[in-house]
Length: 180
Image (cartoon, rainbow, N blue to C red; front, top):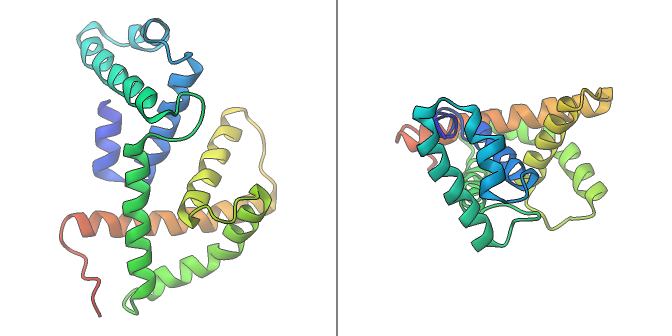
């Protein structure tokens, strides 16, 4: 829970990836509070367990409510993606952010290719980007190597999302002026 709070404040892109991981962790524990307690919460010091129990319990309840116990993402995570997509569109619509435009156009061929491979051409571009990063995260957990092409794509996508996360942070602090 503290990790999620810190990531949300520090880097919204890392936060979203982390929260997707937490969703999968809950699913891996059969969306069962007792199993989550045994496998996750009990691994923490006793003074942190009550807070974690509440946090995981709330997430589990939200997953049930949102109908994402088998797949998909919590509405709170979709909202983050919507906020990032809105900012992404504003940045692309402004001539004040040429470096962001360059990062986007560098990543765009990879995004198009990924959307084509996934068969979901209607999926928002940023969701495709986050899914690619999350997929690579899972591959690395399995100690699988990435092809040179995949590494190149992930580098471009990571650069774009990193820049977007920085602009998100500036916007949140009131330091970003989007208007031309």
